Amino acid sequence: VFVYNFFNTRGCATARAGPQTYTRLCSACHTAQSKGGTVGPDLTEASSRLSLSEMIRHTIAPALAIDPQFQIHVVDLVAGGSLFGRIAKEDPQAIYLIENPLALEPPRKIWRKDITRTTKAQLSTMPRGLLNTLKRRQILDLMAYIRADK
Image (cartoon, rainbow, N blue to C red):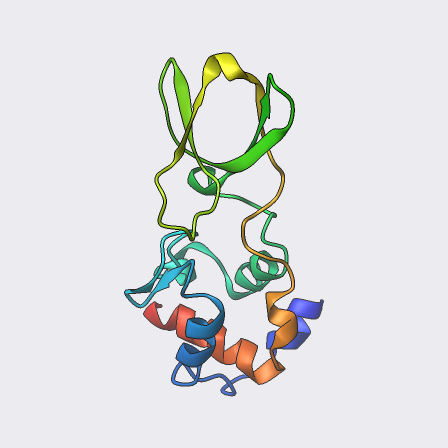
């Protein structure tokens, strides 16, 4: 109901006003209109994959569905403690973990003999509440910009 009521306004969103919001909130991690980062999924064709209501739901609750290539893993260590990050690659002897996807550092190599278990975390690297900083019109303009390919 919230999504329907929120977006039940024809003609009020404009893709021209969305780039500023996209650049400020999204471009460090996502690509849209050939601009942005690769930490999160490419939003260029989001409008063909997701309806408008699905896009807003996934923005409000980013852990609803996590693309496997962006899945965060918890790596429990034999020595105690845990590491969190995205697995960049695996081989029979080690896994390579990206702990901070915004840092330009190579993945951390963790020997399998040093790992007690690896589990998928039910969380997203995308922070919750990003839309809380925006006014209604800014959200509509952002979605119009992302969906401009449609």
